[in-house]
Amino acid sequence: MNLGIVLSIAKTHLFARKKQTIIASLGVTFGIGTYIIMMSFMNGLNGLLDGLILNRTPHVHIYNEVKPTEKQPINFITDYQQQLKIVQSIKPKKKPIKIHDAKPLIEYLENQQAVLGVTPQVKAQTFYLGGSIQLNGMVTGINITKETAQYHLSDYIIEGEAIDLLKNEKGILLGAGIAKKLALNRGDYIQIGSLGGEIHALKIIGLYQSGMSDIDNIHSYVNVQMAQRILGESNDFITDINIKLKNMEDAPEFAKKMESKFNVTAIDIQSANAQFETGSFVRNLISYAVSITLLIVAGFGIYNILNMLIYEKMNDIAILKATGFSGQDVRWIFISQAIIIGLFGGILGLILGYIVSVIIDQTPFNTEAMPTIKTYPIDYEIKYYIIGMTFALLSTFFAGYFPSRKAEKMDPVDIIRGQ
Image: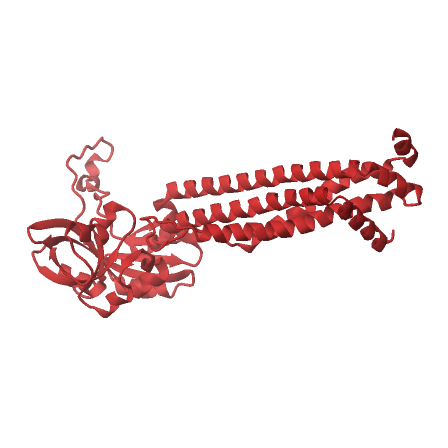
């Protein structure tokens, strides 16, 4: 088989029927282009939805949970061990909300190989005071540098910058719902009342919007030291420790280890967001199911087009065989045509998919859940383009291979007699 002659004849066939060649190439182009557009768009949206939870949720959350005492006094009396005991009006165990020896615990966690980052928090129940209006609220003291780096807090700041909280000791990052109810803006002062009756005047350095009104109507951020001052506690008072692991899958085991070793409550991200995990799995399943369906449909369309293209070349097959070309030569001529169509159609499909993805990426998209997101999210993962091009070549190869096997076995005398 002379490859140069085979390619030359394949090229001649393709240019002789330009309309059919263009239609076959466009079949590949739109099939692959649609696949890339759908995968880029759907996975971009899935990434956005996953980010709403994963970006703001620690892999392991350590705190002291208020719960009833597991063993009541009657359990320690040996005289009634074999009898039914009924205890009514059980009260929760009196337990401080702060984490015991929080600073040594934080140092221990930061030295663990599996830990990516540790962020301490101080949560304080407060009142937002505005004239005669008093709103119940929750102020969380944070290390703004760590919160921004590990939990993307800056993505939820609609006015001001996260670094401003670090510069202002008496600053507050106020929930957007609170600011709206009290008619406050960035730069104004707001009075914060503690449960102990103390009032603190804090400057609003920015507005925070999570996208969930129940949170935005009560939640704000201050520095850790300011939260400790509101509660009237010392600088070792820590109520929560959030842990980011290098591998999120290790969270359940790590949480159990913390509970048994330090006598604290540790909640892993899988337990805290079980419904989210299910929803994420279903969304990804739908994305891949739709994409695979698109590729299969495109593959059948490519096969039908190339199949018709070959059967319209019956006279050419007869002439080629009559002039000395073997059946194998004929087969590779048509396979070469199919691969050339797949190559050019695939390249055009990649270009089409990328251009449409860029257009979608520039389309305005406003959502309260992610105020900093201004356009529709697109995932430009290179693997979608590699899969698309690979499928274009494979589908056109097999679309040309099966009909070409029939062409290889045809007798030129039968073809001519049939004409």
